[in-house]
Image 1 (spheres, rainbow, N blue to C red):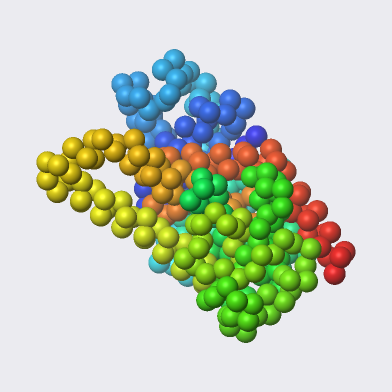
Image 2: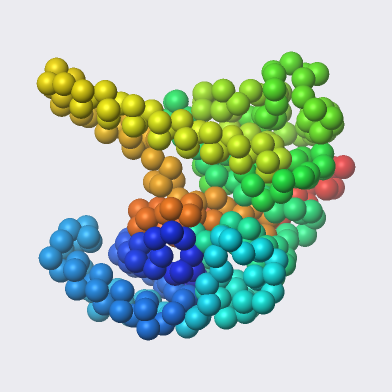
Length: 353
């Protein structure tokens, strides 16, 4: 199985991208990773990481065969990088030698390549995927769909979280269908509970778009449980939250900001005086569990559902842990035939319309 990685996408590229790739290679013995970016720099950083790993605990297996690991790394030279400040459409069309564009082109044309991971410009990743890869038949718009932790230890899928700022009711209906298929296939949820993000739980609440979507979801074969308020996103009462990309992006970033604020306030409080420091020691296990649950890096990135091949958009600030998790997502989705199952789900829904 071959996974393509944009080695120069993200705030911490290429070092953390390469580290995450190595961790994924250690975990998956039949995995091949192709890194895209400046070949000279990638080789230099890779050599440094491998050398440093001999004197630290980077690999979980102390007897790891580093030469074998490196034999499963391919490098495709790409001298250009698309930044977050550039207009996505223009950048994708003009920077043909960029790490992202070359990776997407390879993903489209290489049957052995099953997916792509990038922490680069969200707009550029989505534009390249949309323009070059194409969509699953029947899908009007692919959508970004990250999974968030819930209070009961499970996950809730938010679809869309930023790929489509302006949507119609039929786009959101398809988001619900794709989210339903994802939860069944990847997380084994037998009958996913689908909720529509709105300003109140009452049926009549919302703007014109949500009211139209509500009617469509009510008539669908999905397990639609009604409107949901943002404050209940992590309650564990829902499996899929359906929304347009604008509202979804606000929701996701609000959750991330709240989690960061909570951990910061707790850290400040525990360091206040001797008593609070002792309390922190006594609560060390609980604090560690909470930090782990709120750490979005451990969940990987957001899959771009609806495209013909797998694309995982990792957070721009991703470090090795998150890149490793994102590559794991590609492996899991491939093994579970996510693309094929979404195709089947959409075909069935179209037949029922």
